[in-house]
Length: 124
Image (cartoon, rainbow, N blue to C red; front, top):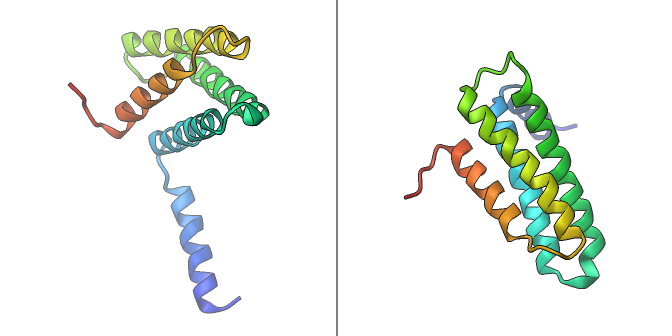
């Protein structure tokens, strides 16, 4: 390894260890949202990719629901309840999308709204 590679490696290790939980959540939600949107835009031939991305989104929302259900979670109770409700909605709506009985748009909109909240951006 040369000095440049070593520096890059050391910096990337530090960056990973200093990442905040909020930043990690943002990154995960952004990644899965991009995967869903990309697969949906690719058309019917990308259906397996869409199923995989939607499944990843469901796992993510399940983890969020478990996190906010924990009595040690520091978020306000009202926000925790809203996140839990969204997780339930995501599970049900995803099933409907996979059965081709619903559109994917609400899932993308929910994730986008959460991303705005995590980034601190407000919309009117």
